[in-house]
Length: 622
Image (cartoon, rainbow, N blue to C red):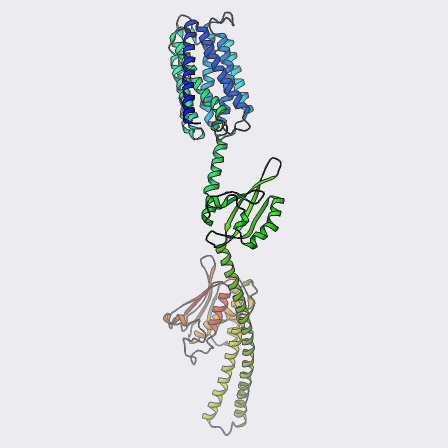
């Protein structure tokens, strides 16, 4: 609407209001009953109008405030009609006093104020129309029954005027209207601004009318007339707020939620940080989001009306036109279609496009709603990962081949080393037996030393072969009883050296999940080391136990043997690393290295604590 048309509309409204006001004043001067009837009929027409619009738009309107007020207005209008007919001088109800019309009036005021007070509660909540209609019907019937049966409190007494009940009711109605005004202000975001202002004016005018209706002593008096003028003004504002707005600007009242949703959708489509677009049946762009334009670098005039495939690479264009578009127009749907799209500066982007169809009433596809996601970096990362995986697989194959060759080499070397060692050992034994009488003591000592060293070399070769097999041995996990394993190992140690006096303390019920062969090797190494390094103790003590750790048990083997310097603890698990002289304690230097490797393969940890000449404790988890 132009400014000139708006000014003309406002001028016409003011002139019409002035004419109506003058007409009502003249009617009041001529005949009060005529004035009263005109005012009340206007109130009835407005109330019925509210109901008619609200009732007939209830299926398309989410604003249940308007619907609740509309249902209440129908019953307010019915009581208002009864009030008009019962007014003093109308003669419709013979023998009825002015009290009947006053009682009907205050009843309609109660219904009206309560409807405005409760209506905000139904904003955003479901209104059961049938229940609301039934409750108002029952309430109206009960009120009319009490009025016409004579049980309703008196409101007006001829000669003395209004009763305390009537005045108190008007004050209460004013409080209810002020409460309605408070809740309306709390919910004003759900209404158009003009509607809120008009409803606020109407409620305040009804409050002023109620105060005027507490002052009259004559139903034809000035105070009563002033109250009716204010009532007329209040209903006029209600008419402007609810009826005229609903007819002239239905979006502002009946479809406000729809309008707001549409505006939110448009803002979301335009401003959301995602590449959104729509194409028509010819594949031409009919709308694009601002982010789409900014991300690809095009202007809106360059995009709208152009074919979407104009922005694709040639390969993607053919794929879209020959494969994707026919399937999309058949099903109305596509998801994660890979395309390559060209930005304005010539950069090629990899995108995934998903779309759904918007159809008309006949089910024909009108346009699409599509989203594109840039996966260029993701695709490059995936290609890099694939390349790395291929390279890793090739290196793993090479490593496997090298391991097989190394294993074959190890067996060959072991065989080739053992053969001469066996020959040397045999020669030493033969020499000792054949020349026992001719060899002196020093020569025999040298021969024995050579024999012992060949046996030691053979032991090293066996240990190296076992260690090389360890990483390739497949794990077979099962529940193990470590306490039983420890008992069996201790029994073997005692049988090997029955003359030794060693005190063993073995925990009961120590269980775990693991490979039985490898875990047995762990305990055999740890208990064997404890047995070996406590060999110089007269009262040797060895303990196998278990303590609670963080989420899993910690097992340990403790002895009071030779111990070690904690400053050298980093060498404990290194291959061929020995903290003691081999002449003092025999060994290959691979035992603890093997133990650590087995523990790590079981997802556990191993560590040690010790003090030189005061024993050591080895802890491990699985």
